Length: 100
Image (cartoon, rainbow, N blue to C red):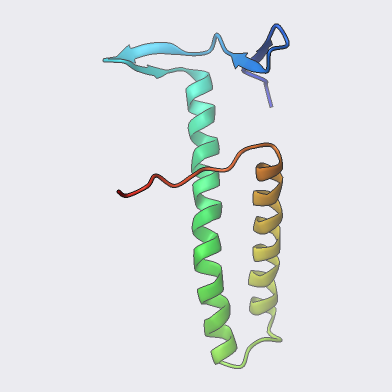
């Protein structure tokens, strides 16, 4: 993967030259497109963490805890949990906006 950001003077702040103004305060460009892909991936993983327990519960109710499908879905759950934990270790954890 091509790195699109650079560390500024060792301050812990990053910047990029890969953005451009699009319209009315919005920006686009390669860095924005890559960020959007990452955000889509992260949202998908969070969505799967809601869906998977339901799928496992259905299979349990059908007595299919030993089935290939159950094990496959359970493995997905473990993989996604590990992925989200690594993201959290890097300080990447999306906070849901409050609905005050």
